[in-house]
Structure formats: structure tokens, C-alpha cells
Picture: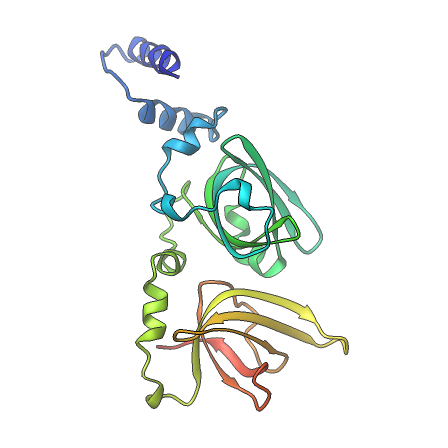
Length: 235
């Protein structure tokens, strides 16, 4: 790697008539900026997301887990009818990630080859399913996603004064839209609810754009497995 850095530094210094000792990080960043992708996996190690200490080891992704965090460079986007599969380079591994229609609707514009992204998702039967992403190729803030990952969103839910509300507040871990056996459109949400993890199903009066990371409000029905009037919360 050091030889590559020295050769790239010499080339840059020749073209720009300068004498600068570039670091490995600087060379890889310039290479990435010029090509929109990195042909070497070292860039993934060099690039810091701020969440390196909680990334899921690649060897653990074959185990069913409710939440995983993976970073990588998008190398291909395979669009299907109502969803897509993205292929990312994660160090020495190529991983396939399924993006369901509601997640694709929100993040589709960021699914570009060469973009380095951080994915929050879950694993099931050896497959990775995306909940949300942070795209480090853009200047967009991704405040909702960052607040989820750094614990701010959980703290907001914990600080809610339940005595002052008629509804219930929860932080969405994951959201899955589906059709019931009767053909009704429904939503299954896994939420963090002030110290507890809950799962609800709703088929009545719910927001059609719910994704992981949102703080939502809802009314729990007589059957505690169901809720109604589910929407993004106004706090």
C-alpha cells in the first residue's frame, strides 16, 4: 500500500508542480473522488463513519439478528418490480442487501454505484434487509438516522410525559408492509417504547410512509398485539 501511495503522490506532484507528502487517507480520498468508487478495499477501512465500534462483524451476518450495522461501497443495484437488491463491497466480502418497497421509496435516490454507505438492517435466513442508510457521498444531514444510531431518539422517547398524552409514543426499529389473508393492507412495526421492545400490527388508519428511525404515535387496541391511528409523532 505504501508503494501505491508514493506512486500516486509522485503523479500528483508532477501534474501540479508541487512537493507534498500525501497520506494514505488523502490518496484514497482523491482516488474515490475521481473515480466515484475505489478499486481497493483499503478505502473502506480508512473511511470513518463514527460507528466503527458497533459495526456487525461480517462473519456474524449469517445469524438471524433483529439489528445489524454494515458499511460498504455500492458496486451494483439490481432493481426488481417492487423492491431492489443492492450489492456492496464490505472489505474483502461482497454482500447482497434487500431493500423493500417502502424503504426504496425513501432512499432510492441514494442507491448509486460507488457510494459509500452505512446500512442499518436485520438478518433473516442468511439475508440482509435494509431499514435505513446514511450516504457519505452526499452533503445530506441524515439527522433522523444519526439520532437513532447515537441514542438521541431513544432518549426522546424516554423523556415523554405519558400522563400528558392520550396516545403511545414509540421509536420504530423496523417496519414491514404486507397484505393480510383477507387482502387488507397492513403494517407490522417493531418499536422501542420507554424501556420495552414491542411489536404491533395495524390495518386501520396508518401512515403509508413509516420507516425505521421515525418516532411514531399510536393507540393500542383492546388486543395488545394491535394498534390504530399510527402516524409520525408530533412532539
